Image 1 (cartoon, rainbow, N blue to C red):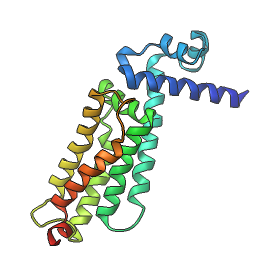
Image 2: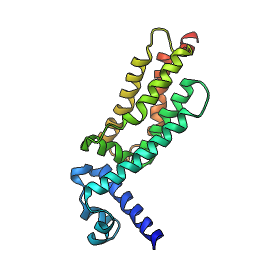
Image 3: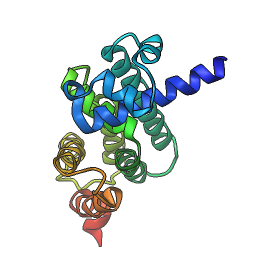
Image 4: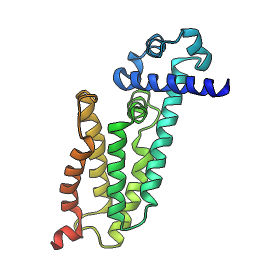
Length: 194
């Protein structure tokens, strides 16, 4: 019985994430979520009392996924710029492939529950400072300004792709990787030496 309840909650959360991602918080209704999973409103409200409760669960799961991605990239070892690249590309991959993460990004903005960049930006700043301390950045590039630029890159990517249809947007990670290579050429001391 408990396993079935967990599967039902997961199905509801996933359906809600799809609706929140597509329609936003205001545009999503519990009726639409229940219809998506072919469930009665009573069954839905047994698991989630309100749309707010459902959104909170989606955001919590998305933040958990983002924190795990950040921790994995930061602790992977190797030069700071390489770990930064891994982090950036993993965030792009999650935006491309994980509807719960996309919904979390949208919900956190619309509901004012905290910007998703609060999860990754502090670690990104640390990696850039480490890269600067190790001489991986050009002398003319401050870690703080590089972090600002990379932050704008990720937030801008989300905004640009959200203006399109995520379901028809292809190769988000590949496109970001190309832009990141240009960015690396602009900030990396190694690129300056080449």
